[in-house]
Image 1: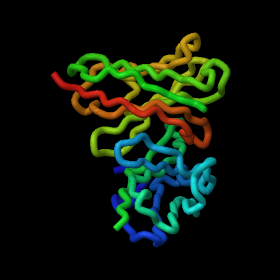
Image 2: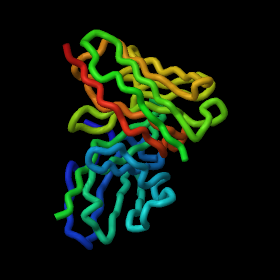
Image 3: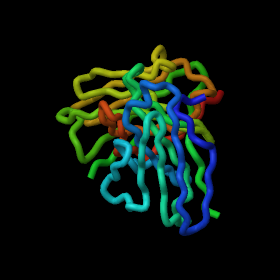
Length: 110
Length: 120
């Protein structure tokens, strides 16, 4: 079981707003910033959100991130069919001086 | 624009060594402060961080793989490599290389990934 827990699946209809949660089971990890990755089918992951709520250049503002305590969320507003993908949260793990990934959430656009 | 490209080792027999190289273009490994990283993804499963190396040669590995992993850097060729020894079927995965940042740990550029299958 991952130290970063995500729901295995989420869904929404076009135009809706959906959120995906990421919860850290170790408090020390929870104090670090969260990054989010989007993995479209058959492709490499892409950095979507970093430092909890920052968007890299080119990422639409429909995507937003937030963090409170040891929980983080990714929100997607105005859901589009091309948002159907796997989404992973990740955090820096001081105990191993490396990256810890959540188990991933498969988002289905109905 | 930064580009990373993994070499393919394709099929590896059990107990042998998996070897991959990531060629970097658009940035110089030797003059950048980044953590050049390896990540893998077993078929149908999630992402697993393997480790990273700095241009100094200093490296850090996932404790679960540490006894079998070596990451090295070739500054002259602007590439870094992954060796994973004593492989089993559990090491079958798509292997990605990426450019990581220390501290926050974001990986902002990823290679396209290469599938390595461990099978006799």
